[in-house]
Length: 77
Image (tube, rainbow, N blue to C red; front, side):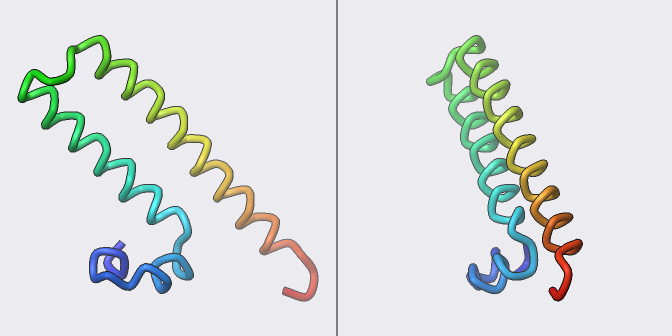
């Protein structure tokens, strides 16, 4: 995350591929909270967005975890 925030995206990607997804997730939730505060998004729409975002985020983290397991267990790597 520190490399990503410092603008070193490729280094961040090499260190932890899920870091970019984590940053995007929290940025999306922060923007949603701001829009809710400004009354631009209703509570039902916000709840639907959060539900979808949580599911997509979980899928991304599980996929990243599975990829890391497969890469570690490949002989010769």
